[in-house]
Length: 271
Image (cartoon, rainbow, N blue to C red; front, side, top):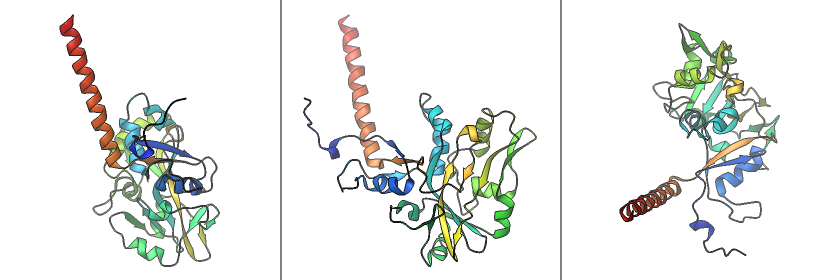
């Protein structure tokens, strides 16, 4: 029998943890670190953003980069359908973060409470409002190749992915979206359009709804998909450990590496 000598709070957690299953069931565990019985089984985490997934697909260590590229991820960014055909793209959506098994869903979308639309619309830095006309122009559109460079099919698609003066876009400036599109195209060289945007288009009796923007795999041309059900049995969220834990882990890794290097130096001297 192996003795357990460290408490859960003393152990270094995985910086990134997969939460596979229905998002409405997995989100409470992700954000609280507690199971259904209230037992602490992990550290509280934040759901990975769309931008985080894109960045990992380009810069993660080579041994895990294909995994990020070859599967889809539900993200913490929300696709919010308005009752007038307009739309809100919400980064780090708190309504998604608060998902529980008891949350009201309609056709797999989270029904938002009264007043939530105007509240969200007022948050300029992390929310992009699109008019009904802009939604019609961008839905089903992505990046196309013009003069050998992947370019947004129209201005609205560019706003969604690359942002505006006030809104950072799905990519949040963490990657060059056009370079990312080129990387995706290398997996599907015959494709004429990539990074297509599909919005959540569900409303319920005059109420807006929200879904997670899903970052589809390279095999599905890295579509930004806002139509997946929050009760989808094969949902996949990624929970990110707080920076303090990651910083502690980096310090420990540096100490171990330093000790290892020192031991190698001593060994060489002895020889």
